[in-house]
Image (cartoon, rainbow, N blue to C red; front, side):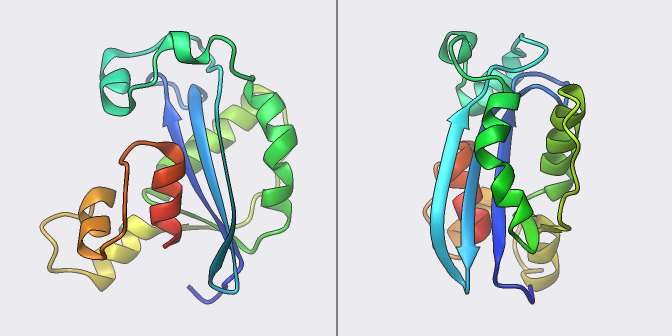
Length: 159
């Protein structure tokens, strides 16, 4: 990636709806160094959890009942998106779909920077791996990962 000023992003969702963000992790990178990290649970919409989703990330309804709605989270993170050259995510189409759907749900205008997908990059740069899931790539690159924790996933994508 040419730019060294980017944010890495990861969402976890509560159910099959892309607007159901229940956790977000953001890592800011400037000049190739991590300069900040932020994460939050989110009260999802619609407010229900699929069994598979809970099994993957361990977030349950009781953990997010008192969590802020996305519009409150956006007030805190919108500056990250305004002051960066790119958004990096592992399987960026998923995370960007969640971001856009959630912004649209709350009628929040957005002009987002371009997205870079580390999954696609890993397929090009590391063709010998058995798969290109974040945990596999992280293991190969010796990056510590607590998989499906939004902040840990964002950090791994940044690194």
